[in-house]
Amino acid sequence: MTNSKKPILWSLFAGGGLLAAFILPVMIFITGLAIPLGILSEDALAYERMLMLIQNPIGKLIVFAIIFLPLWHAAHRLRMTLHDLGIRSGRASEFTCYGSAVLGSIAAGYLLLSI
Image (cartoon, rainbow, N blue to C red; front, side, top):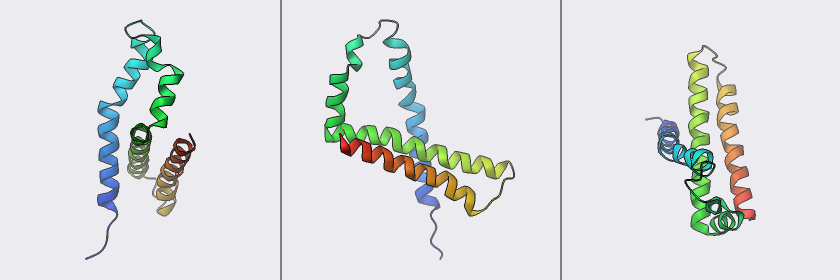
């Protein structure tokens, strides 16, 4: 049997897709419609409240997941799209797509830990 990285990549892809389908539309609704239309108070996303969220370890983990999983979902989807379009550059497309997700994840983790 050969070792494959496909289960790990597919689980990150699935987790990112689930998050993108269920959580991100709610975030877009809150920040793009609910607050500007007055459905929610502007204090809902006040700096102090968001800072408290980011300073809490569980809040950091949630924010990291909201950034990390869609990054990996997008990286995998982009790589498969390149493959479907006939751009078969082998390891270069893997390195570019997944490398971008790694760099974005590291940057998000560093920034969250520095707060």
